Image (cartoon, rainbow, N blue to C red):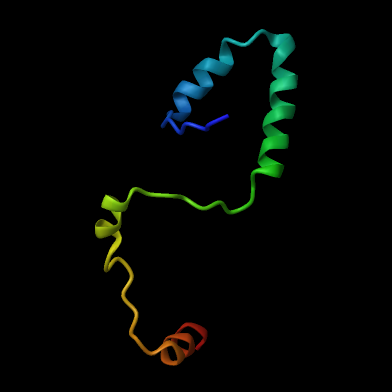
Length: 74
């Protein structure tokens, strides 16, 4: 099954949840808590190749990795 990411506002989510029957809310909350526990890991975000140019130069550190490491840890 392919996942599709769609931006949804918090207000839209709350509105949708408010339409759930009361008897289903407890089950929904348990599922949300379970997802939060299992999905709490860092995941990779893939971007199209065209977007890489926008990212270029976003972080600027020198070409000396030893110097860069010392700067981060000092």
